[in-house]
Length: 585
Image (cartoon, rainbow, N blue to C red; front, top):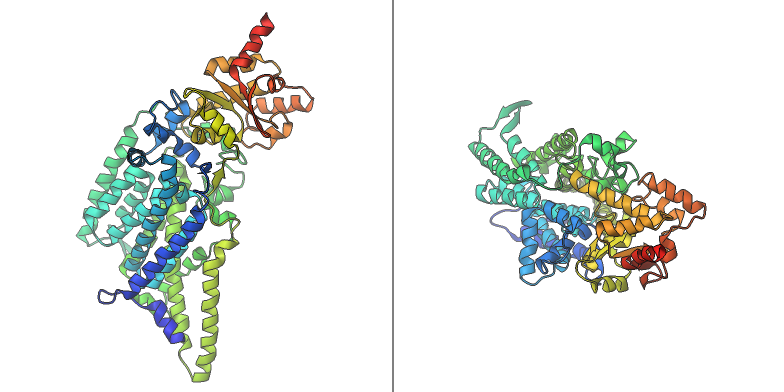
């Protein structure tokens, strides 16, 4: 039994025998489909279900159907301007085929995951030609993918996984033209990935031999490096030269003064705890944040053993099957760390530092963990077949128990996490509101501090003044306008003088004000990570509410209401403006 299991898990791939490759690849794709089914089943359950990040990255693409949507809309124009060209073009092509962008967004993750799975399996075989390891690598990676919302969001960063793995595959295969195609696609869909690929190309012209760093003797390494870096530079040039109305990128000095980037705020980046800042911060940290929040990831712990296993080839004989391509794992690690610290050194110029480690480390750990696991199992199962029959029998029993335990942990450990799968879908709970607003003129503008404001552009296709989801602070030309809008709106909503609301309506051309029924309570502000840092307005508003002072808008919730639900009320701006005229008369 042990011998059969041993051969089953450690069978090598070869040109003559493709059975094991086909078997394990088919199993990899099957599990990718299973995970995707459970992850995506909620996405198509209702037209009012959307992935959280999609509410800012995709809603504007409905302009491809109706160019007149969101006229002169600051938020829409901003997110359209920061979308990578290839990403926007893909959705434009689908819109040309009559496919709604939001619907396409719900289907796209499955395509990306299947491509990722095939390339992950293939890269693993180029490093370690044992198909079972390829299967485990894809299993680990799919578990990592569904532990976070990056790929399920089908936003630009979701494209890193298939494109980076495709780059690694063609690089290891030394296929120049396909490798250059992947570099081009990285520049079109997720330019951050170009820095990782370029770094790997540079490191591949260096070799560590006899503990000394030497230049590679392979001419192809220099060809790939020269052509690849040249193409990467060409792809990055448009981004470097791009002139935007929303520039400049915020400086470190500015960032340190922004409340929204402080700990416990909506876009927290800075932390008082250095360990959290450098390792576990979702935007600032080196480690994938799910490693810090959830149950310790098994692949990461197993992957740590791989360097140790390689130093004992006699005890772990399967290490001899590892090819020279294994060097790419250390190259991924070094480049990721290098870009992480570079991004910190030029903070926000290269966007968020975590973007350069969290994705690549998940890929690295999946590959290294799978290889290490198969090597360990080979050594254990091989040792169990030695010795006398009685001794071998007891060893085999222990070995089988170990295999069963590992199998259970590998397949079940994601369930130990707080949430798995974690696609982070948002369910719109106010369909009647979305339908009401969708019937209003296309140039309508809705002002609201409610979380429901995040859903309006997607579900109603109407413009909003500001919302927490779209308040990205990284481009000062955009964020200073958003911050001013938020300040004006909070003053209008919580002022006892109706003039503030009327001035807001006139200044921005607001047509409707959307209010939560609980908006005029101190807790509404204090428990909201986005609103409570808007000072001094937030503190002053809470103080007045605690004193029982009623804001002017609260008195118009019945007389100016044009829509109501148990949780929300919509006030007509024209009605609010008339109150001023009536009072003057």
